[in-house]
Length: 133
Image 1 (spheres, rainbow, N blue to C red):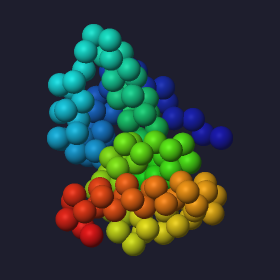
Image 2 (cartoon, helix red, strand yellow):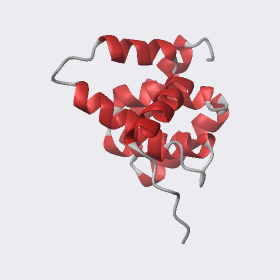
Image 3 (cartoon, rainbow, N blue to C red):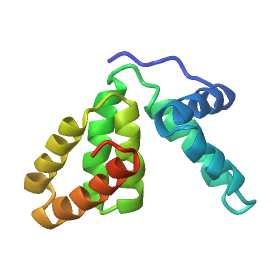
Image 4 (tube, one colour):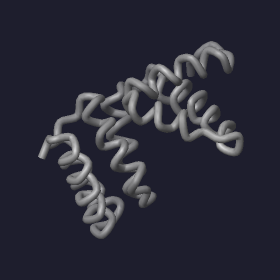
């Protein structure tokens, strides 16, 4: 098993901020930054360094694949606000509307029909907001 060389927090923070902007868009990231308080600052730093700077920067999967996995995980967990955000991110990462539909169909079998039903509603609204459906 090959390990990536250890990267420091400053590198992860820098790389994570860049990937976060590429995947979620400047508007979302700027809003999150403006909304950061002393209470939430450590959490924002954590997700920037580790979710975006470490996991989304790993070489083993491309961003399209990571988006598909993320959509599925969010449906499974019932995280509907995050799902809407990541549907938009999936489009930025190159998934087509039909591919997003296929991911959501897959969740009907493995996550539950009621979860997929809600996911389709959330995704359709997010895609409509982007003028894609």
